[in-house]
Image 1 (tube, rainbow, N blue to C red):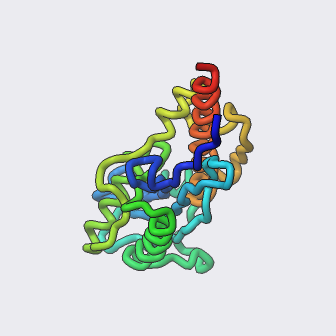
Image 2 (cartoon, rainbow, N blue to C red; image 1 turned 90 degrees about the vertical axis):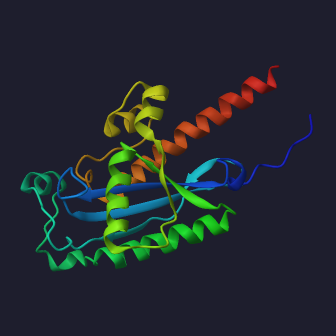
Length: 211
């Protein structure tokens, strides 16, 4: 059987580039509560055709004027809004920073736009879309409503839907002390997403080889 060229990322998901996103917020309502952190990791392909996490793009975000922040959310995330070391950016600048790197990754892979990958993806996409709407951003690289949700994928692959348990079920490391940081949760979700896809790719390839 002749070796066939590995398909490019643009040929894997109908021209969409999977980009893992995690947001940390001041509550659960994307129309009332502040966006406080955002991180994004494009999914790449290595020379063997396996999925691997790319470089992270992230920013702390200044609460927008008039937003609400539930103190209980800050207890969970550990975010200290008064910490000068946060280096938080206004929403528009934070989106510009992350979106520029996502668009560059999509262009590099020949993809027409990005599709958000998240653990409970509707939550992250809701806050992302709300921020885009507030600042009137015209260059949002993400599909406005389609997502890949690692809750569903992990439930199928490992029988676990909680991120920490799914990551550990996949045989990956989990540090509870770093959880609820946008960067850390994005890195772990990206590793989980790649593990599911690579396992499926290998099992599907083995099934085809036995036909």
